[in-house]
Image 1 (tube, rainbow, N blue to C red):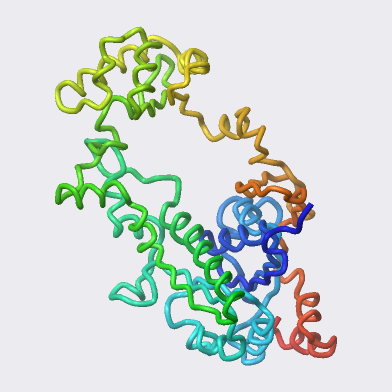
Image 2 (image 1 turned 90 degrees about the vertical axis):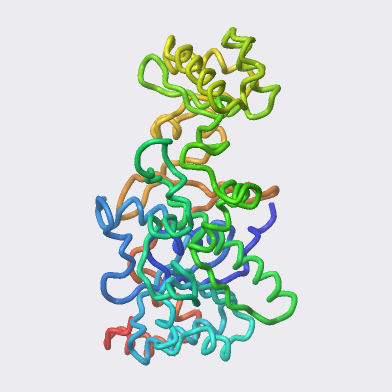
Length: 393
């Protein structure tokens, strides 16, 4: 087996809550040595956001596995010097403070780059380092609202729907940041020069709002909520209720799949109406609603199981985690945390060939590896003791 792809990469993770910690966790899952740096007070708010098992929430445990932890007071000059010494030998620094915070601490990209010209410095913010909203507070709901995504979510009638999948946080702050970091790392290894990676969660969310933007380019405006191709406008891509209150998801966009759906439902007369809108489209959707209500969700799932036409049951999260496909891929696993006990682990979802077997390190306790990390950075036992005694670590 080969080493993990990021085995020799060291990451300083100064982020909190969801987007940044999950970005850093993905890098850790790919082999990077991720050092989670928390303040000497409350630390990462995710430790206490939600029900706490013993010392941490399941939310925190999921986002911070495979990391080592160090506590550091960056408002203290000695604490800032500690970070600078750690950055001397780091490949990546990722932070999620508002613009200007790290500069005021004299730890911004300019200061870090002087010490380590090859470092990749990623700043994840709601609105980016520039623009009139750069200093505004926000969360996923706000980013999706500004990006035009929230307005498009939900049914044709009623208010916009709130997604339980944090599109701005995850597609923007997590995955886009990881993509930018990895690209900058490749260039840094080639050129010896690092980069500042400026990630705006609003920008990244809007850049992935493909279908409404394409509609504006084609027609001058986006369709109303619930009337786009992929949000309920057509019969072949829709959600239909079943007899028992369940739902079936029909994603038969291609004509060959829609014809197969019509064959299974014994309605060959609907074979040419999959993409119909207006009166004809509503008539076809009404017909499918009536048909699907004649059986339970599981009955329909069994009927469509052998029909290759993009029809599936709508599963609850509990059902999804025990689904045969999810189990076969090992996406969800159980593990034992040394302090918090049994918990669920969401494995890294990307598979590499010749990848070694997972060796998951449980999410760290606050400052668990402080002495270990500082010792590796050249701090003496006396220096570490002094820093600890004065509350810097």
